[in-house]
Length: 197
Image (tube, rainbow, N blue to C red; front, top):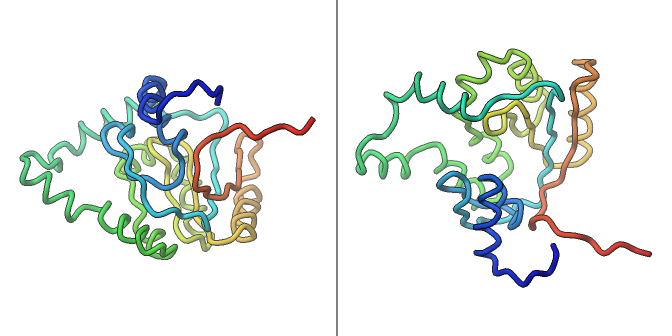
């Protein structure tokens, strides 16, 4: 942003110190994130999709709490050995998503959405569960909680459909604390646009 002449790798290392999602914000597009989210491998861009995002302004979910609670309840399902981990990589839920992205198939992407943290967050935060259910029932390609929440999203193939779902969510909940946005997928990360005048 400030033309410091930093290489992409240097920017990623600095960004990762700010937060695990920050390297992705620099590169943008579609990527497979590994590690804590800071190890990125670019994938086929999905720049024809739209997302409806919704979040209660006053509600937050602690990411450490979500992971600790999940670990306490479901650690027996973890792949323990290197062989089990390799098997999980080849057959786990991310395989379907990677295939759907490679095919650029919005319907497959919607069907492949998966978030293990929903198992603990939705039961603890009924507002998030209700919002997620509303998103899923509004004829979107798919809907889900994002990360550890509390943001919920729905995917669509058109701006009109995204705006229709956003309006339906606002009408159904009528809560001034609920914020709803429509965003288009883009093939790049953050940048500063030149200002005119």
